[in-house]
Length: 247
Image 1 (cartoon, rainbow, N blue to C red):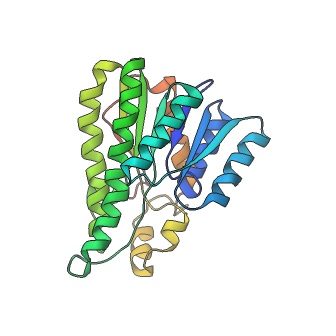
Image 2: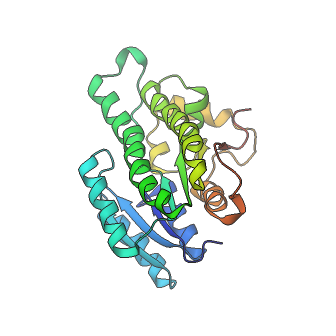
């Protein structure tokens, strides 16, 4: 489905990003595995892809730092000369109530989740507009659409991603670039393992499908579809992957 496509996945060393990287590689894409600090995990992802005959390499970059993002895209240009798909997946979570959220914690979450996606979209769009084609897929969250007590900063960052997705879709459509968002619900990753027990339990109880929490593979399948030619006429959409948690 993605033969000869070049795909950058941010935050791809673990969890949902890892699943997306492997799924895209299995379908023929050349995969760029971005990571910030988990070099060993990133190497495992690359090795797993290469062992199966795929094409992958890792780039260390903190997406909240524009200098590092710029250097990452420079490396992509030098290696491939193009970028077909960007998946903005890098993100952090640090739960707290409105009255207890510290400014530095809020800034850390928003700078990584929202500003990081913004930087990557800017640099990717420069490449894609010249190509007159491309796909940008932003990983948001059901929390960004409907909110959740105890996740004020995280919800703000993920809601911002949805707003950027809709605006960018309108701006970039004239260049043949689609921009969509995926909004996962409760997915079984290291990030959700760190959720406060009362928040996690409440979220799981709200899922309609009997299987409960979703798996990273469930999100990866939707990203694969959006990255493929099957989704060429889909843009400006927010697709929930939440087991009918929210309707």
